[in-house]
Length: 67
Image 1 (cartoon, rainbow, N blue to C red):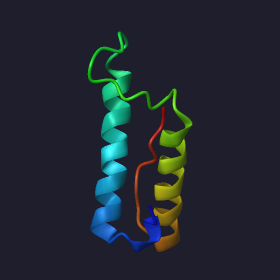
Image 2 (cartoon, helix red, strand yellow):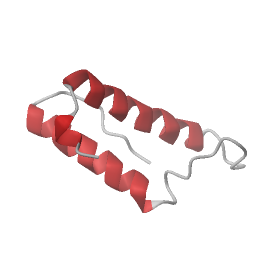
Image 3 (tube, rainbow, N blue to C red):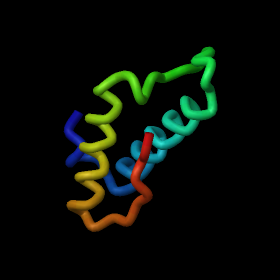
Image 4 (cartoon, rainbow, N blue to C red):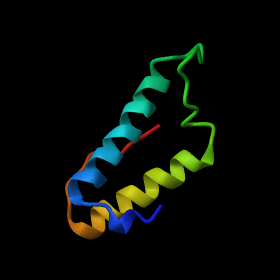
């Protein structure tokens, strides 16, 4: 996916979705369904990093997703 082609609202929405699944996983220590594996799969970190880099490039304020 080419993150640079997303609208500002689309980019923010995508970032918020990543944040929500990270929070859901953190609140689910038993890893019961649904469990997304954000801290286990490198793809999640790559997606987060790409989104946050584009947000920074555009000068959009955001809270970093931490896990």
